[in-house]
Image (cartoon, rainbow, N blue to C red; front, side, top):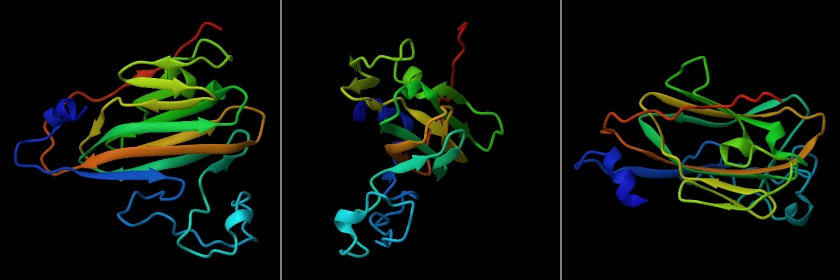
Length: 196
């Protein structure tokens, strides 16, 4: 993968790798495990095992999402390239979660697809394992992609719950590289349509 991504950067550039997750929603260096372990916080229902530990421990490994609600999972200043995206959920049909990505402050999404379709399993409610170079889906909907998704100015990613059920667990990880001399490369676009 390093050989492929090396084409995105000039010879004089040293990209910096960052990672966004529920524990570190900004991707800031040293920004993980900063959530206050407050047992009264209703957004931390999984807190009880670590409620007495205090700040500095992982107390927010995932997020939750109400029916019809959207949440921003990444807000990245460019130039940058998303190099890895992992997501899993306990929702009964992962295709009812919608992924949208916006590049360079465009109001229209460059990526607008059900999560399952993005990872190559959009054809069925049933879980399937899938292993390929750009994407993999492991048992229990552990979805990982290595599509290179570059942008010069700004990148934003959202997840929408299109189901009628409350989603208790959405765990995610977005790995990206930032650098000042990213070469002009094609943008990543993906849209989904179905006759059903």
